[in-house]
Length: 323
Image (cartoon, rainbow, N blue to C red; front, top):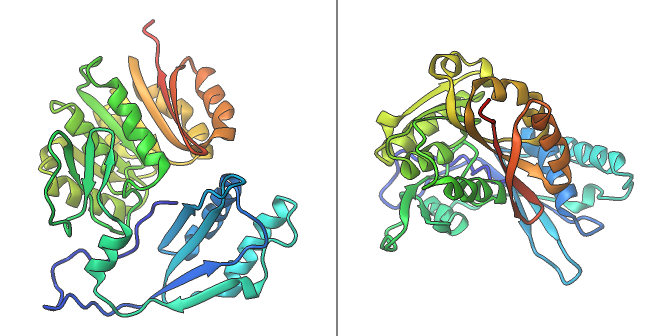
């Protein structure tokens, strides 16, 4: 995923000078054409299995979008496999000369102060009324903002990417109009949305599910850091088949920041656990994928209420009618 944070050790077992030896490499690319958001997203999906971090950045050239792709790998990367995956994307998009082996630059990350590295690459950010920051941050919390502490970890969701920001902004739009009591965060990653939900609706109980057990560990850690452990139940499982989903259903609100295809495939499962009158906030889809995602949910009776667009990405708000 595009704002998946690097696998930085967040435990306190570090030397006095915060020098943490590591086996991490960085991989950068010199493409033969300017990357659109669509193409950058396809490359991210193709490369995420060979990296612990895929970072997309939009340089926004005078001619429009100009995306870069940077990988962090655990150990020396297999540039042959990386090139093969990129070429497959190029072939699918009818771009035969997207890159060659000379366009892949891999090098070890220097031994350095990793707390400073995390601080530099994941600075505090403001999303709507939230101030999202890591435990490394020692500055003042800005008045009037809701503090939300998220560390760089092995799970998706540091708040940097448009999909996460779109979700949080969509959730904030629902605040004040609804008294939600029971929520589901499907594909919780770092737990950022589950925690945001509890801060927007203090009486809310959240079920947080992810197929990756490491994400559940990270979600629980972040829930504790934010003082909301008693409000979040997290479990690893295969989407809506996770036992806890049925135990705690139905839900007033479901948040799912994943990808377009899984959103489409799980539409019926979402509709089944959503209360009449309840809302679903969906993200992880590109603007061009919006019609398919909306159609998959509308045929199940859900209605599109609003769409948040940030760059090439969409966050959708849908409601299940009261029959």
